[in-house]
Length: 68
Image (cartoon, rainbow, N blue to C red; front, side):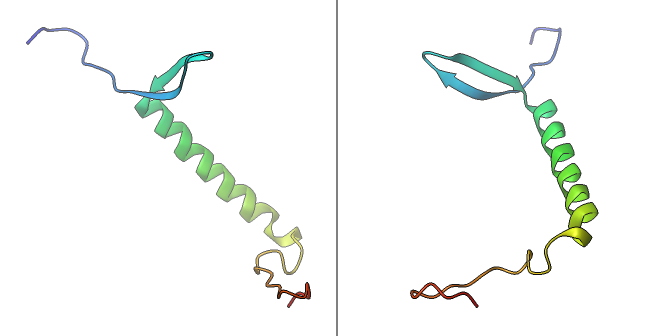
């Protein structure tokens, strides 16, 4: 087995004939993804008190167009 750098796993984000191939290191991508998810949760918590009163409740509507 050859010595040297260990193989880095890559994630292909785009593989299109006209656009080319875009790939990133998988570990870095998941770190970024988890960071973004945490930031989104923080934003939701920060702005929840100023949201519309029924914003978190799903709106149901019937076939006649009335909402409940």
